[in-house]
Image (cartoon, rainbow, N blue to C red; front, side):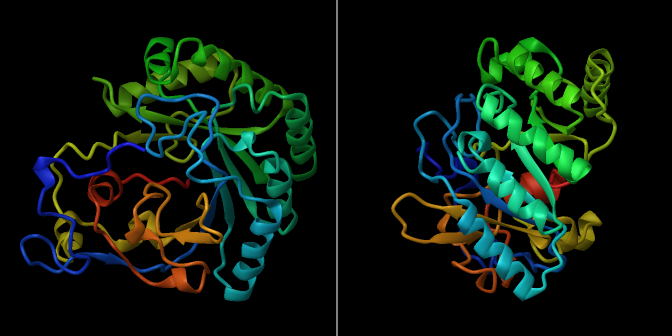
Length: 317
């Protein structure tokens, strides 16, 4: 695991869940409108990216494979708690490395949920058994299923710099197959190069038009552009006063509308986390049940400030 300690620029910050370093009341976010329940399918991935927020790789099994039966248990609890969730999301690692990925998606779709699967659309997704399963799900559930493909940049050079030589073309091969099957697609990119968001969206728009991908480059839900998460950069702590100063609401932050279920290696139980971005931070582990996970979340990490509040990013559309 990489060193998750804060940089010198942030020393003294993000310590007390109730107060900032200046002694001001720290902002907290209630689960006010649950829309998405995420499942981390496991941190194993077929590739190792230069800046993976969850440190996925062919050897990182810190989060192990979750099963269809375990997903079903939380779907049962969702109904019992009456959260009103519309979407079940699956992230990794690479979800299609999990042998039960198609079955887990089917279990959620069969209950009427929309399903979002985050994938690099590379070799694990392109195995014949997986392709057959995806095609069956699309035929039965149509646009209730969306695959959000990780395409860091619209250009080969920048994408391959992040994910490895040849990964851009491999991903496009997978996206072309999804296009031909009629599977609904979205894209997740990054804003880390010397390029404005408008220029990035224009570049993606050209690519989508050239490839015949039915993805709207101008839609934040269909082309999700994430800011880089870097704890070496100084970021401000978010106080209760910040909402009014920034003109934002706690309801804008993704922990107001989502939770994520993970299975830690050797833990013997599953955990519900406040955030998809902080799988290894113990203070964001809310317990083993959805009922326990209903409590408010203190914005006590640099990612909370830079990524969610100031960056305005969200893992869901």
